[in-house]
Length: 359
Image (cartoon, rainbow, N blue to C red; front, side):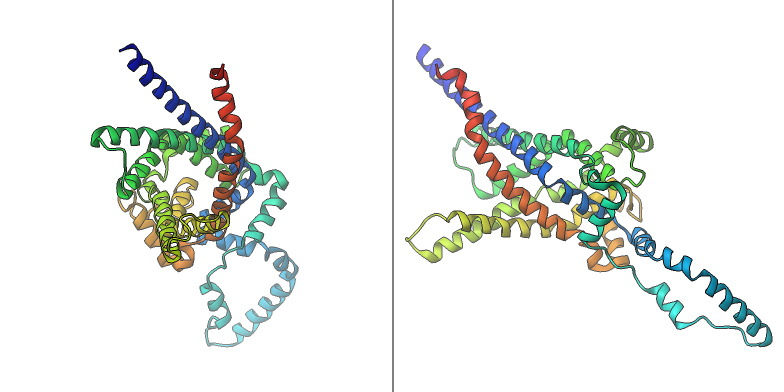
């Protein structure tokens, strides 16, 4: 009996150590990747929070200097036009140029344009505002996700009395694990978004106080309903990766049963791109709700579908997918960098965890 208890205890201890090693490695890798690519995070957040109002202000910002230089000519033309109108009994009609200009929709700025404006406004530090909170959020998200995912798999195996987990149950467990970290990481996500879109350049404490005073604790969880769809992003990525991988290996026959490092990297990029595009409208809606740039037209009852419908009616499909460029760039680079760093530091983390038990 003693030997059986000792064997089970050692097996459980080894499993706990493995979970700690994986969770710690993922957390540290998340900090590195989040910090290295944070300028892209700031740019894509600003672009996703833009609405027709902010785009109009953005497009007219550069025209103020030209208008100041022509004010005198405009006043002269207005005076002469008033004199000619006083001599004619026919009322003036608006010109076609003015009507076209009023109906023309503002153009969406590019990544370079938004990055240039951030640099002019706040310098290099504007690209790193809120980076510490984003790094902490990334570390908590990666670590808690892995711990939750491992615990849910153990519970599933205990209920089903089987060691194999099918594709569909595995995807469902992954979605459930995504929800497990939200109570802890969502407030940091809201704070990071608010800091990136704050136009008054306030400190983090002031921004958080403003959120709590205006919306209460619910303000720190704005846009959480978007995760009803966003939680499927890892599942979509995993499914696309596995399906395409099996198709490639099937075409090779019995020559090879694994992908090369380059093939796995490229296939991972494709899978990440497909998953990002599939759920991106809800990512954009989440950012708009967190930044307060736009709310559902029918109130909270209409939810995110109502918000996306209003954006589509006002701005078209381009408005729904505004900011998709930096989102794809940051997402693909972040996934690749995180996996690379995780593999590099895993050995040292394992040595640190298991080192004291080697003797």
